[in-house]
Amino acid sequence: MSQLTPGVSKLLEQALSLSVEEQELLANSLISNLGGNVGDVPAEEGVEKAWAAEIKARVDGILSGKTKMVSYEEVRRRLAARLADAGK
Image (cartoon, rainbow, N blue to C red; front, side, top):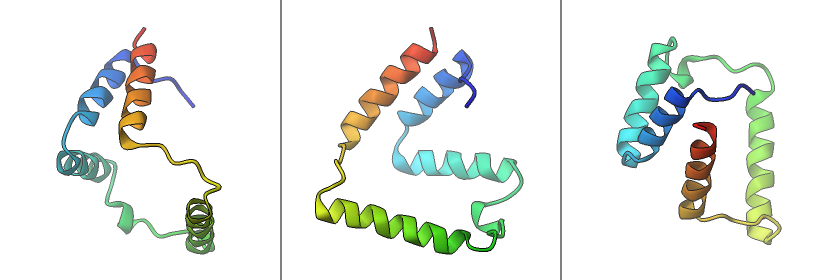
């Protein structure tokens, strides 16, 4: 995976500070600019079945306690630290 440029890191940091509704609007605008909505792209055969299996496995992990959950605040803290490191 390629590294984020300092400019993109700064934009991402600003985007993460937006409200959830603003982030959704921004994401939809960016996706539209790339050629359409996510729902407009036809899925390859078997993709939906594979995603359903993945989702079930993740939910099962959460319900069984095998999956360690991380709070939203912790995720934001970790992302902010990574963005700060990427901008150096």
